[in-house]
Length: 556
Image (tube, rainbow, N blue to C red; front, side):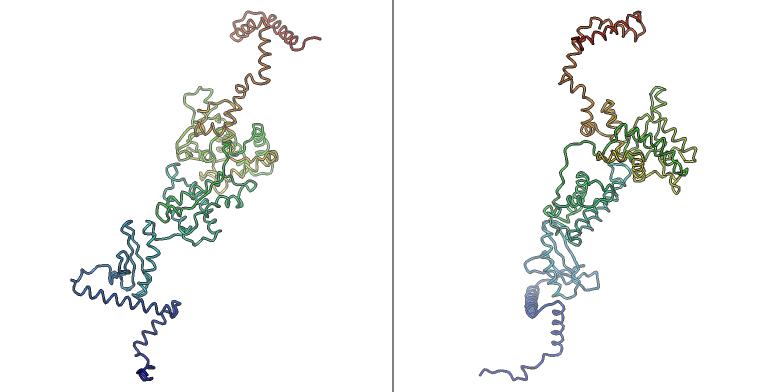
């Protein structure tokens, strides 16, 4: 039998101090949810660290003492073979907690974080885990801090908030900023719908964005519920989200290009015909008659409502006569109205120049709109004066006449005017006709009506572009169907039945020996120089009529 120690020695408990340490270590492991195997691994790790410490102490025994570091206390590399990661205690603090510091020499990326522990063994284990997680990001040159979708939106909105301005194309206008917020909320809602609310943006599958546009199209609308969102509008939302990811997530290195969402736009028809429905000329006249003779003269309404209605009637006429954008029209002040310089006196009584300042223009460039609205503006001004409404140089032409806002120089907002327009269309009886044709008239329809009407009157396209504050190419592409209608006579010349009529006309002209003399007579009559007796002129007309009848309707 081999010599074994007595049973008393084998069952002897360790000294109280060692038992206390073992109990503390066991409680620590149990609090971390570790089992016996993990306990053994921990002991092995502790043994390895102690052995390494002893070897290091032997190596450093003969070396001169290094200069004491000012920040890094108890500095210790996590791996023996790597110098890009170490733990340390910050000498500037008194907590005694360990920190980890990871550095990539190639990208010069640095990551430092508190490990929230004073235990050296735990600090080394946590540092090793963080190193494996963050090393890849450092190598790729992306930020070590991760953000979720809401944090991304907040960062982007704070950036754009600083760029707000009243001048278009000099930053982002206040209205565009408010619209941007609505667009970004679509993306936030889409991410929440797919249960990625707390997911970091680098961990969201890029292909998830492919269904974003379709998801928007399927969402219920708050306004104009009878019509679906247009694909152009949805694509604008997608573009806003792309820009956010490009300007913040990508450029600020929160993600890499491989993690950039893959968006898919909806198809848009190539036809650039007006996207808004337009009134027919007779429908516009019918609405104007309704406004003049019924809407503003309705019984049972108070004086303030009657003034509002008359104001809207003036606004409707001026809008359709100028083709101004909604914002441009509602932002007009009396100082912006002037007589057109260089015009004849009779025209000065008809036309007015409406100045659109850069801060009120979509393009950021000021321009003048010339329109025959002098009489309308004068009558509206008299209405204001008679009812004690301010109309000084700096006052808006279309001020809000609500009792709580009257004479405070506050312009009307578009929703209020849109609401009144919809009511007028309904009361005038035009709504039923529009619904049959599938047309929806909005404030912006006035601008399309103006452009269409001007082209049909053969207004030069260059002059029209100047007056509307847009480009010639936009008018050409958007109203190409109108320009075709304008040229109908030239396009169909000598074609089909037109050719028959032209040949018939030519035959008639060739059989009229009195044609030249008659034309000469008409020209002299216009100049007041003719001496031709009136009875001879009557005879020519009667003979010509008989001559035509004989050729068109020969006797049997």
